[in-house]
Amino acid sequence: MFFGMGRTQMEDNLLTMEPVFSTINFIKGCISWKDIVIIVVGNVVMFIPFGFLGWVFSKLKELKSLLFTFISAITIVEALQYFTRMGIFEVDDIILNTFGVFLGFLIKKFVENKFPNLVI
Image (cartoon, rainbow, N blue to C red; front, side):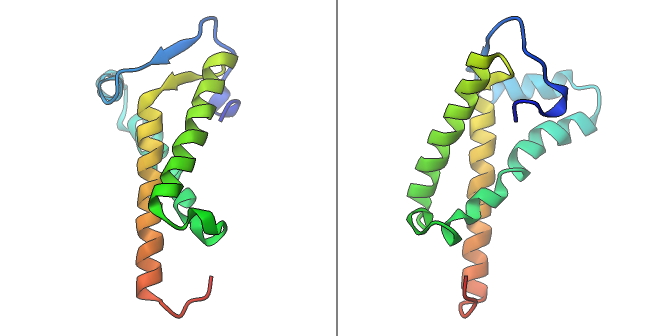
């Protein structure tokens, strides 16, 4: 997350606290749909596997505990990006990443309901 996509340390600490509007402005300023898919959809899809953590850690089986733990962790990661200047603290990233976890949780629940005898 810190060194991916050719990141280098920025001159200033950047903080984006305009939920949704910053993503909309990003989309308006994008050159291609490929950029939009990679950044916006990637921020959701990349975090879907975290929705399955309940299968690994029993304390994260419930949505409330999973989301609380994830939002706490991703906020720390975003803050580290801000303080190390290796990225931007973006509230939109927290929202999109959390949506990905939620989708993963829904998929996990669907699999559990569809295949109740599956031992995981």
